[in-house]
Length: 69
Image 1 (tube, one colour):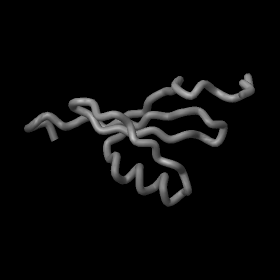
Image 2 (tube, helix red, strand yellow; image 1 turned 90 degrees about the vertical axis):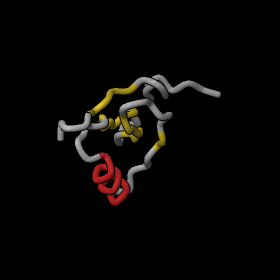
Image 3 (cartoon, one colour; image 1 turned 180 degrees about the horizontal axis):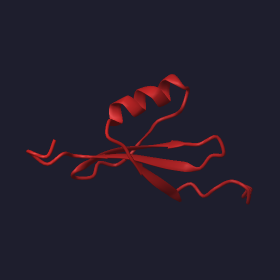
Protein backbone atom coordinates (compact mmCIF):
# COMPACT_ATOMS: atom_id res chain seq x y z
CA UNK A 1 0.00 0.00 0.00
CA UNK A 2 1.35 3.42 -0.92
CA UNK A 3 0.70 6.61 1.02
CA UNK A 4 -0.06 9.63 -1.12
CA UNK A 5 1.16 12.66 0.79
CA UNK A 6 -1.26 14.86 -1.17
CA UNK A 7 -4.38 13.13 0.15
CA UNK A 8 -5.76 14.26 3.51
CA UNK A 9 -5.82 11.87 6.49
CA UNK A 10 -8.97 9.75 6.73
CA UNK A 11 -9.95 10.90 10.26
CA UNK A 12 -8.94 14.57 10.31
CA UNK A 13 -11.94 16.80 9.68
CA UNK A 14 -13.73 20.01 10.55
CA UNK A 15 -17.34 20.42 11.59
CA UNK A 16 -20.18 22.68 10.52
CA UNK A 17 -23.29 23.23 12.66
CA UNK A 18 -26.55 23.38 10.69
CA UNK A 19 -30.16 24.01 11.68
CA UNK A 20 -31.89 21.48 9.40
CA UNK A 21 -29.77 18.35 9.01
CA UNK A 22 -32.34 16.52 6.88
CA UNK A 23 -32.47 19.37 4.35
CA UNK A 24 -28.67 19.39 4.14
CA UNK A 25 -28.59 15.61 3.58
CA UNK A 26 -31.21 15.89 0.82
CA UNK A 27 -29.35 18.70 -0.91
CA UNK A 28 -25.99 16.92 -0.75
CA UNK A 29 -27.48 13.66 -2.05
CA UNK A 30 -29.25 15.53 -4.87
CA UNK A 31 -25.82 16.97 -5.76
CA UNK A 32 -24.27 13.51 -5.88
CA UNK A 33 -22.35 13.70 -2.59
CA UNK A 34 -21.71 10.58 -0.54
CA UNK A 35 -23.09 10.58 3.02
CA UNK A 36 -21.08 8.72 5.69
CA UNK A 37 -23.04 7.78 8.79
CA UNK A 38 -21.49 8.84 12.10
CA UNK A 39 -21.60 7.06 15.45
CA UNK A 40 -24.50 8.40 17.51
CA UNK A 41 -23.77 11.06 20.12
CA UNK A 42 -26.24 12.18 22.76
CA UNK A 43 -27.84 15.54 22.07
CA UNK A 44 -26.82 15.80 18.42
CA UNK A 45 -27.37 14.28 15.02
CA UNK A 46 -24.48 14.20 12.59
CA UNK A 47 -22.95 12.71 9.47
CA UNK A 48 -19.84 13.09 7.35
CA UNK A 49 -19.26 13.93 3.71
CA UNK A 50 -16.18 14.93 1.71
CA UNK A 51 -15.32 17.96 -0.37
CA UNK A 52 -13.98 17.55 -3.93
CA UNK A 53 -10.39 17.41 -2.57
CA UNK A 54 -11.31 14.51 -0.26
CA UNK A 55 -11.35 16.48 3.00
CA UNK A 56 -13.76 14.98 5.54
CA UNK A 57 -16.53 17.32 6.76
CA UNK A 58 -18.77 16.66 9.75
CA UNK A 59 -22.23 18.25 9.69
CA UNK A 60 -23.96 18.52 13.05
CA UNK A 61 -27.40 19.56 14.29
CA UNK A 62 -27.83 19.87 18.04
CA UNK A 63 -31.08 18.80 19.67
CA UNK A 64 -33.26 21.73 20.70
CA UNK A 65 -33.89 21.99 24.45
CA UNK A 66 -37.59 21.99 25.32
CA UNK A 67 -39.02 25.48 25.21
CA UNK A 68 -36.06 26.89 23.23
CA UNK A 69 -37.42 26.67 19.74
